[in-house]
Structure formats: structure tokens, C-alpha cells
Length: 398
Image 1 (cartoon, rainbow, N blue to C red):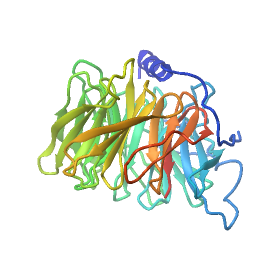
Image 2: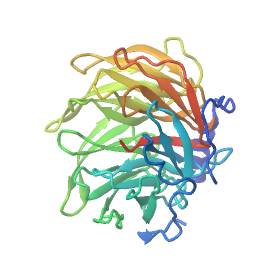
Image 3: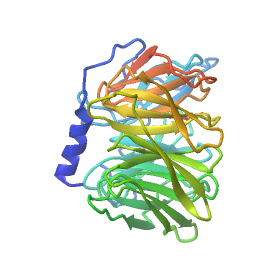
């Protein structure tokens, strides 16, 4: 990524900064990536409290953060989520800088983090033998700059990452011990009117294709992964509206539809998916409330487990938009929006029980919890927050 690209991303990240959120529930945390695949001797397990006391019913949650925010984030924290959905503590894992996205192995034995660094990004593997004390295994270069997303292939043998800064997609083999090997393939995207910026990679649920969303190329790419060689073959490049800036995509549980969120024009486009013919475009709808004004840069999109609702975060409006999904999955209807109670909601996740939605408010440095009605899909105002400086991603183990 060039200096100008880096400056632009960090400038956009500060738009709408309104100061820290009111803290209702928080406990402060205690407080060099290699060019190729190397051991992480500098990486250490999480500091602070060890596994919760026997008999307590808590589960771990992992929180990635940026180091360049004010105050700076710590890279990777471990949180504790109790039975009522409250995140009550965070502890830091050393040696995992700028963890902008997180992914688990299919068996949940390993956690992987992309380290959004320039000019050369990295990915870090961590053992979850004790999920409360993630232990870094090794770090490998993503062969590009500023990686923003990653996914583990369903067979558990490959990791694919998106290099935002250099506009490329990289494939890494994974060993039995969870370590990340040197890249086996690197695919360079090409933009039309703008430089390419691959922002997300996901796996299609029907045929295990690799789907890459590129904000700069205004395209969704479909690849087949050769699991013998660890290389990608391009099957389709779906071009979306010029200047729309597609950022993230989420599949419906039926596997036949997906919803792609565009950062630059604040829209969601419905896509029909067929593993034989690829994607076809459907209706497009705004990600914002009617009458919303001012600059806005949507970030994350997710579908409820039952497939009835779609959620999207708006950075600028600083809210979560809630949409009802038609029975056939082919259209969305806006139900309403709810404030995130913070600034710049880069990521969010629906809690494992479906009763809360957790938002990573990057610029106000806090995770906010919004109650969710599983029947109506609607959200209620924030009822708790946990301070995590520079937080940019939330990932639940269960």
C-alpha cells in the first residue's frame, strides 16, 4: 500500500469521531512479523487471568484491534462472555499486531489473525489448546500489503487471505500443528478506474469455491481451489456498479443467495448463486435509513442463522441497519436502524445465542452490546459496553 493509500484509510477511519462511549460494563486489559513463514518466538500467550474458575459458565471471545488509533489498540485481546451475554474482561496476546480480522480452523483448535501491516502484511497462527490463553505458533508473509480478511478452507488444509493494499489474494497451506506455510499462490487483481483493493474472502457453502470481494475493482471474483497444488483458478469476475466499492459479502443459509455491501455508495445488492453458472445480480437497496445525510462508509454485513434477517453497519451514520429477507431470499426490506452507541462500527457479530449483537466501534474504542429480538429481528438500544481501544473485529469461539 502506498503512503497515500494508508493515509486515506486512516483519514476515513477518523470521520465522525465523537469521543469515547459511556462505559456501562468494562474491565481494562492488562497491558516483528517475518517476511516468510517463521516461528513466533516473540509471541506469548495472553497475559492476565487464566481460565475462569471451575463452575463458572463463561466462554471466550477474541477481539482484534489497530495500533494506530488514539489510544492505540493492543492487537489481540481475549474476552470472557458470561451467560447473560456480557463481555466482562479483556487480556492481551503479545506478538499479534494490528489483527484486523480473525478466523478459526474448522475444528476450532486454531485461531488465525491477519496483521494489517504495510508494506508487507502477515498472518499469525495461534493454538487454542487452552482457549483462554491463545499461544502463537508462527507467522507468515501474505506476500502483499495491508491484509484485511482471511478464511480457512473447509478441509482445514488451506488459509486464504485478502491483501487490501496490494489488491491480491494469497493461499497458504496449513500443517497438522496449525502452522501457516509459505504461500502456494498469489493472484493479483486489476482495477479499471481505481487500483484494486481486495477486502474480503469467503467460502461458498454449496461448492467450497473461494469468493473474493474487491472494493477497488468493483468486482466479486469466484475461484476454484486446487487442493493438490494450493492454487486458484478464476471461474468468474462479476462486475458491480462502477464506483460502488463492494467491501463484504454474506451468504444466506440456503446457499443460493448472497448479499454484497458496497462501501462507497452505501448499497446492498442481492446476488443469486449457482455453483455451475456463478453469481447473477438482483435488486439493490440502500444500507441507510431514509433521509440519512452526510458521509457514510458501510463496513460489515451478516445474515441471521435462520436466514430471516440481514444486518449492516454504517460508519458515519454509526448505526446498524436491519433488513427482513423475503422468503425466497431474493429481496430485502429495511425494518429500521439502531445506533451503535459509538463511533465507526467496523465490524459486528451476532452472539452465539442470537439474543445480542456485538459491535466493534473502532474510533470510540469499545464493544457495544445491542439486545436482539430473534423473532422480529429488531435491535434495542445499547445496554452495555466494554472498553477495547482501536477494536475492529469480534469473534466468538462457540
